[in-house]
Length: 234
Image 1: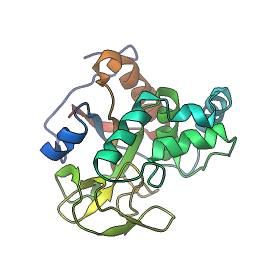
Image 2: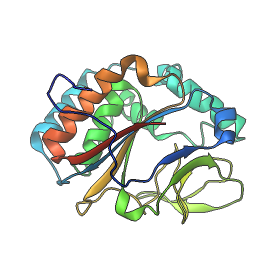
Image 3: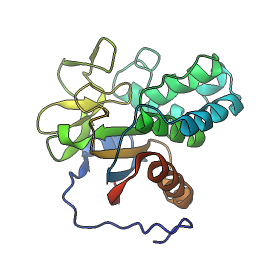
Image 4: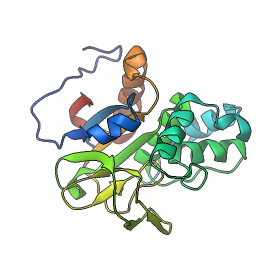
């Protein structure tokens, strides 16, 4: 399909890992939808124009802490956690944590341009965005519920127990949960090919797909110089 900015979107034959949604996840999250973009990118430490846009968006969001748990996507992931026997308040997922920072007037973390784009997308759509370095992912990715007591070190923080959490796992080990990403697949300045996703546990993204893809297109092409693009829905 052709978007307004003239960029052609397609699913081509580039060799990228696919995402497999397990039956057990479908049982606890039947409305789960994932949109994924695979692209070659250039990651920078900071872009002043992007940072300004992100902070302007941050300043214009008006939400109270008590209103966050009423957001449909937050409600849905909390319900999913309860079905998995996890306490939502203890294992608060990252999109909820980001909104809490907004409500509490805490400053944004500045990491790199791709992470800044993720935060912009999450705040502007209230649908969480995640990104990964594909060179550190060992092929096809499955989202399922981790059954045994295991843990991994999440980015710049402590060890998290992932037992009974929804996780993304490759052939090596889990590298994502809605609460936290592991350090293994995080975006760094050395990232050359990435996977970026919008993930909704609530509703189907198709109804507003053009809006989301146009935002992806404009932000990533402007601030991450992308090429060799694949787009897929799961």
